[in-house]
Image 1 (cartoon, rainbow, N blue to C red):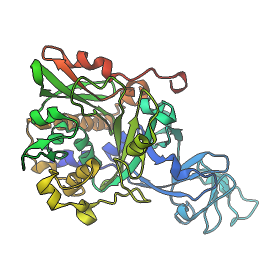
Image 2: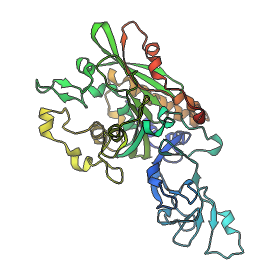
Image 3: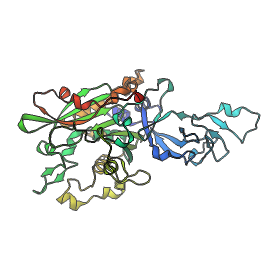
Image 4: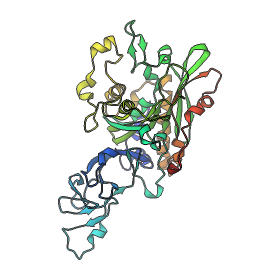
Length: 432
């Protein structure tokens, strides 16, 4: 369990909070490129880390992310006109470029230099792999972008999507690093009746439902090994990556061997909108070849594995309709009665309330990764408050890692045995 004080530190992400300031030292996925596809198109409402923002693509194709409120009378610039390389407030016509400079002030006398004195908070942006990234920290400390494998492979091998999750970011991350729950939450019931679990494509989670956890610090976070017993004295390892400040990479499930044959794998970014809402980003990558249209839809489409979602990226199965739970399916087919892995995750995580009270928990051995993760991120936030910046933010190459599943002989060290699977492909010059 956490003390109420540490739980507060972990969950609050607004400006000036220790955790919020830590996150602002990293590049953050902000929007799908499709949301700002058209130059001079409609502005987009955006809220990240408790800040109201507005995004737009200007006439020249540059993307701006600005404070949402005009500094004149605090009108929301979402209602503004996107025209001639700037966003113009409809109240009095003040206009701002992607760097936050006031380029026109038609309501003021021509001979004043008032416009030169006025600016709007603007955050640097970059586009990579169909995603608009933003950096919201101090400009003098701006790091390089993380070099995830999916961020530099050809576009036909990658996919990205997002969906709204209506709870605090930490609840979502904790689900992403908790390998024990897959034997239950995502299980189907076998023909023998209730309690006979049969995970699709993952027989090892069926035969050993209480994995032993091992942790290994990396240059960008923590590598989490969940070990289950397998046949012939071997161990089945599911190796999850947590990468600061809110990324997880999830190993593929399998029935034997390993995932070295280039099968698709995925990861997540759990980006705080504010203290009580999160953007759950999902990234799919196929290292060996282009996705088929069906695979691309499953990995990144609005109706695939991470859908279905509406035009605002809210899941159609949500807490308002109890995730369309079927008690009949729960009795006969599915452990939860809820369709879809992300909907099952969201249901349990959102059911805890917007911000869970971790001082009321009773944690067990299977929570080792969650306990270690909390200590790590709280430690980094406290260190930054004391002036120690997170070193991994400046080491983009360290993010070139994979999650994996592998069978290893019992005597094989899991870190060494999986090393060849964990490290991603070579980074092209353009991304270095």
